[in-house]
Length: 279
Image 1 (tube, rainbow, N blue to C red):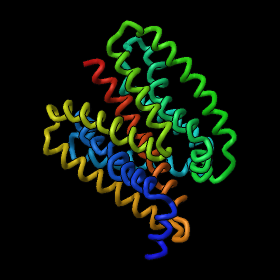
Image 2: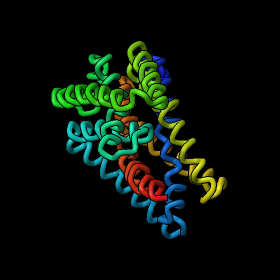
Image 3: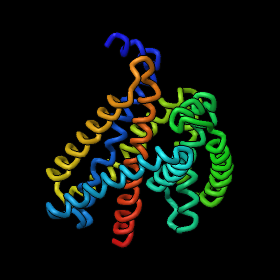
Image 4: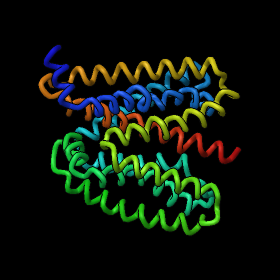
């Protein structure tokens, strides 16, 4: 136990706090997915709820298996879909083509800024995650960086007279400043927990409370959050090296995020967004 605590200290207190934030607050931000499924009518009966949960877990397992077999490709795809997912909830423009550009731009800023500001530290993280050479990952990030810069210029041009986008531009500037001065894991934790997850909870909760009910939402959230923590701790216990727990912490955290993000995106950015836009 003393050796493990000493190894955690070597990982860095700020990094540990950041990972704890991601694990305790960020990873369970999909805990409302059961309530969303009830809201959509695909889990409004016990049998349907069981089917939904089993499908959710199986899809997450497929993501983990794919990461093990094709780590570099899976990491690249995870970064790209994360860019879209982060930005899709913050986009303002309604026109479909421009909305897609705006979504990838706003979400991509998080990925490319943290990566480019702290290239050496992030490279070490990526190498842990894929257990190999990161050249192809950086090639994609460099292309995404150029795309994000061009997309941001286009969004500023299109929305130059819009008050909402001026506020968004200020927010982006503040985030960039934070990403530049804090360690990469801390910067990601701040964004993921305090910006993305908090907005998601606020937006989804206000809608679901009317159709599903607060008690059902709370029960679903508590149950799925507990499952997320249990699976995460079990994975860390099985994978951790007492002498060097850092790599296991990173793998469990980010592969776990990828496993949860895919079904979460299908539900939230696909089924839920489609229904709400029609409504």
